Amino acid sequence: DFCLSRGLGDVYKRQVDNNPQLKSKRLAWQGLIHQYKQATSLSDPTLLYSESINPVETRLGPQDRMLALNQKIPFRGKLALKGEVVKKDIEMAKVSFDRASRDLIVDLKKSYYELVYLENAIRLTKQNKQLLEKVTHLATTDYAANTSSLNAVAKAQSQMAQVTYDVQLLQELQSTENTRINTLLSRNPEYVFDVSHYSRIPTMFAHKVTRLYQWAESNEEVTLSDIAIQKSNLQERLATYSSLPDFTVGARYTQIGKRDIDDLDRNGRDGFSVNVGINIPLNRSKNSAIKEQARLKHLQKIEDKKAMQNTLRSSVKTLFFKLNNSQRQITLYQKNLIPQANRAVQIAQLQYRENDGSIGQYLETQSTSLNFQLAYQLSLIHI
Image 1 (cartoon, rainbow, N blue to C red):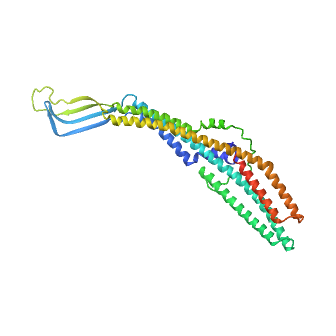
Image 2: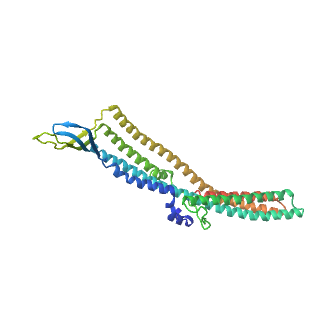
Image 3: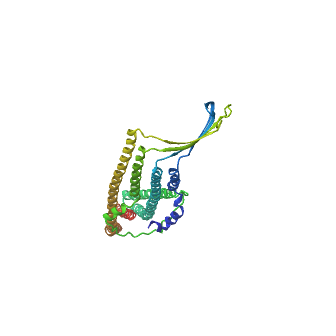
């Protein structure tokens, strides 16, 4: 298991939350939580104050100023449905955060196992380099003694230069991969992970592809598609409210000035009234378009899930092939190619010592053996 890899597992547990992308997903999720209260609350009431420049005269006196307060009230159930839509957004944000966490773990695993491969590749290539140094020295000595050709010396030196370049290249790749891990964890890019203690015995991959399909159906992508379908269904229901009215209730206070008339009943007495309003959704074509758009969007989300599932199954099948192929390669290299290559190296070395073979033949078999060992190490990290 990845978290058991001491070189990186402890660091992951302590610092994975420092990843900026992961923090962004978490903040987006937390921010949407506060949107629920906004979606389910009434809009702010409207307060209107009017000061008359040319007061309207009434029987009781001029209307000097007016103060009105109005509140819009959506049709029953509309706010609750909006809240359900927001809840789906919150669920999607949470799953997106989980997916980002999963992707971060996957990226760290890939980089860490790549470091393991590079560590082993550097070790094997350095061992080959030491051997080539001895062979080059031996070829040079034999040439000086006139028992070897100049071509053999040049071939040994050329092979030596190539291996020296390979070691440098592998070390630079190791440094680059090391930096990639550090950037994923938002730490010092030059921090060095020690993977020299890492050991891993590959096990047979025994799962059937049908089982992998079942597991794939529970991943975050499928969950997000399910929530998107549920959300679009709620939005389709919410679209039906486009044909239903919203209401407005309010109160109005009017200040009336006094008239110069004696014995006038209620002279200058202020007025107070209550009002109720309603919007009338007369544009049927617009409302029908809103409903149809919501219905089509819901159908789109259903088809999106089907397409995603097809892509997912294809990816699972491809991965299943790669895993099994890596297992076959491990068996092939471990039981056949590497032992045969090692025997070929021993034979070529013995033949050269007995003057029955050439340095070129020995160098070729040694290069083949190294390539097999590197391919074997690469297959190990793909299981």
